[in-house]
Length: 404
Image (cartoon, rainbow, N blue to C red; front, side):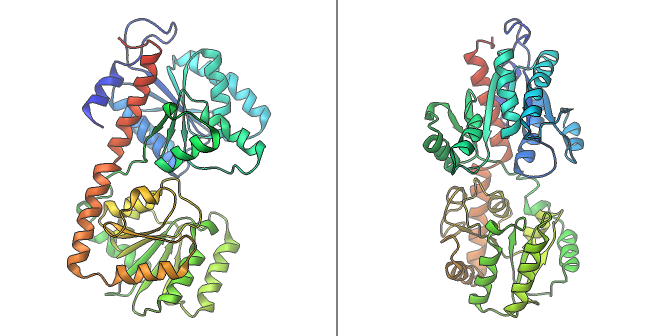
């Protein structure tokens, strides 16, 4: 976090009971369904830690989960509420629960990160006259009128944070949110965690042994949960078209209960005769080491990624990436300099890009790595994400006259 952001939020709020008074650090309440895993949860914990470091008080309300411990270690406070439910009655009851919490804890800003809790938060903010900020984390499904209405709560913040220019455009075009209320804050990568200098060789060797990868063969990895739109079938077809031997291809990610889809992928791999080349691997707890094990990282999503954390993480470690030419990838990949963009759902296009990436000389790979690391650190770091978010908190509080 930059010093300016730390200074600003440290002076941003006043006595929340009256809305006026002596300046004090603000109390920020983030609401989301649960703290299990994923980009929404990761961002919530990162921002909570930034609030605490800046001198504020960070509260998070959710149904809980494995990341609560990490949240507490950051100095934030977790309040367990049934915010994952989409039951209208529970959403309604959550309004009063949040109103009580906001008044009891002197909350200044409510930051809603998901639709069901956002509905409760919006009404609670209105009843307590507190500032509401929302973060649009994806395009959501918006084909029908009722779906767009349900999604529209994410546009009701005094500021609407979009996690990429792509999402910012979507919010403006589909929901008519004025550009003046939209703030683009790209997701941030922990460039310390995803720093090649901090990945010990033992971690990489351990994964290679665990996954039974032969020595001396290039590795191409497609990370991401096993779900059809992530493009695993496109990846398999591209490997078949590539026709290379002596290369290992990995699909790393949990099936999250989609056992039939996993079996479908394994059967397809067997059908094309690539059982010894393409491997379906479950969830990996050490993704930095997995990236370091890899020569090329692929994102083959057939639908636009709102941001595409995998692409940014891989580049932060100096790995060249191949991503589909839509969504957030257009912002995180510089074509021909840090990676390649391919036609969505086009196995031939992906195969051609993999051939180019695998045929790079050592000098080309070194140059690519340097550009990748520099680009991510300059544009998509966690510190930048946190600093910009705290600036938005300050902006909203200033408009309400709660700063000195």
